[in-house]
Length: 488
Ligand code: NAP
Image 1 (cartoon, rainbow, N blue to C red):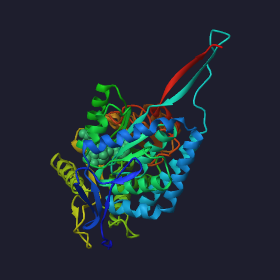
Image 2 (image 1 turned 90 degrees about the horizontal axis):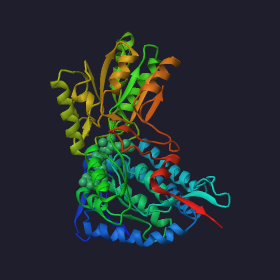
Image 3 (image 1 turned 180 degrees about the vertical axis):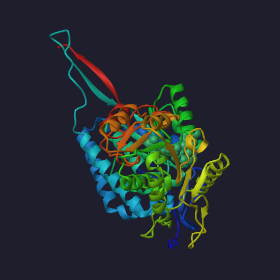
Image 4 (image 1 turned 120 degrees about the horizontal axis):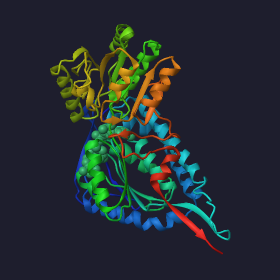
């Protein structure tokens, strides 16, 4: 069982100092696997705290942008080093705070470190092009300049990787940052902030304010001195942020939900397809934006696939995340648990057949946690709520199809377009899928979840505001192009 430790109060990080919120209010973060295990408390900050952080970021801007890209990159290398020294501690905190299994938390922490190193190198790469001028005596070129102060608003499901994949490019391209992590991942984010502090970044370059999205988040979005807002989270919140940012002319970037399909073609390697469907759909308790949710299976192999899938799902070990044999941890909080259970009820009432799971799990000493069984439905039609809305839980909906064309048409018939995958051996089927699937990330013979940090990531349709994060694509959001014309 998880050990119960004395809880620490985590502070805001503003202008290089750790400070309490002006409100003096705190929130206690419990372990979703065991509510009796208190991970720590965090500040419930106000708009005034947020203003202080923005002022610090604005003050630090001038000097930070004047540093060379290489010098800014050096700081990122230092943060990566500090994180590496504390990787186990960060991963354990993540598991205790939001329930992801420890190997997944370790993987995410190592990924955060790799992202920092990747962007550290970006400080040395080209930032523009020479463009021939019609004036033969002139030199014309482009360069890129930072936006200024960037507001980062992040979700709880990747409490290390997402803040880092936003902050690292922001910083290396010369911006300063105010971050509001999700309440449910704020202690993990505070651990990353401690590494930033230990790396010795100049005061004010990175600031963290914790608190409610409706208070701190709204203030960041509406603050006149915040020049860009990068957000990952739900569609409802994202749209609100996009509208507010647009109204005051700030640059914004939204990465939001998904309803990701996998297609199992009649010629698929069924073992691999089952592995990929389970891993894509149920790892992290289905709480990934790229999680597999809808499973389109060609009728010839439907029964064989279903049987193999159920065999494996039955073996899934639910646990508290820290224990080594945990395959699937809890939902990240009580709201999530209730949302998932209510979607399961909707599925049943709409006529889908529940063929595995579907209940809250409270066995084996896990009665104090927010666990739900891995759940599989069949007889799902594409118009059902469970086939259209993002559940964000360990729920798979099986849909039988006769042809790949039918699968593609149904797979595209949702408002989201984040990721999609197909299992097939046929090159023609692969190409149709690549060409016709409406998703920002398409994967062949691989699960829907998972993107490499050096590649662009983002959704189509309602999943995104249509920019891309990660890899070299990040330069588009975090900088503005300046065109320069020089006549000697
Ligand atoms: P969320 O409820 O939208 O929250 C995201 C962040 O926004 C949190 O920090 C939240 O603060 C803050 N927020 C809430 N209301 C706000 C407001 N009015 N103004 C400014 N900020 C506000 O999402 P979530 O439940 O944390 O995350 C799950 C969602 O994220 C899913 O839909 C998932 O698909 C999506 N996601 C997308 C990607 C991607 O790259 N496309 C990656 C991961 C997750 P609080 O602390 O108060 O909650």
